[in-house]
Length: 231
Image 1 (cartoon, rainbow, N blue to C red):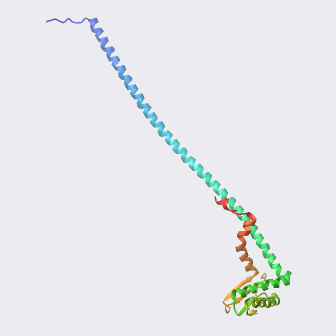
Image 2 (image 1 turned 45 degrees about the horizontal axis):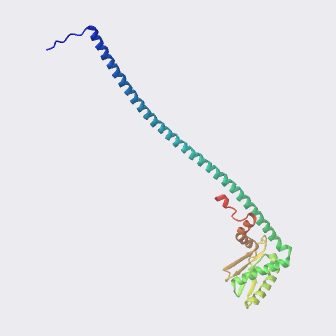
Image 3 (image 1 turned 30 degrees about the vertical axis):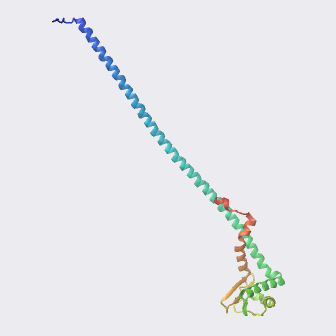
């Protein structure tokens, strides 16, 4: 059986140095591992935060872009509506002025040319006779037109008889004359007073405005005049 010899102080010191160096080396390696792990986790967390912030910035930018686009659209729509209203208002003023001049022209017809006015009344009365097609018909006129209207009625009866084959009785209803401020024309009454055909100049012009307005607009402003304001 061999006998062990005690280590000298130098040997003990050397062993301690080796153990210390080994422990230090192990600690350094462990520290490097911890550092690498920490750097990796930091990089992952940093990348995650960057992605989150980037997504948040993109979302905010998209929201602001939509808001700006919406504001621009509203502004454009508002300006377009204002422009459209100004243009339509100007057109309506032009049309109103046009029809007002037509009213003034119509009003002057009755007093400027008696023969022409009588022929016009004849046509208006004849139109009423055709529409009613009755044996007895009455008509109303302005007091100052009574003589002219009676002559016009007589000629209308002749033409009606010639075209239809019988002669209706047409009388002037003096109980309810048309207003003196009226532009002229007549109101034909039939159906035992229950049917009235308004052939005054004001009424015919009003109907003309309604019927002719699209054609007048097209003549003045062209086709599809309002389409560009709504597209």
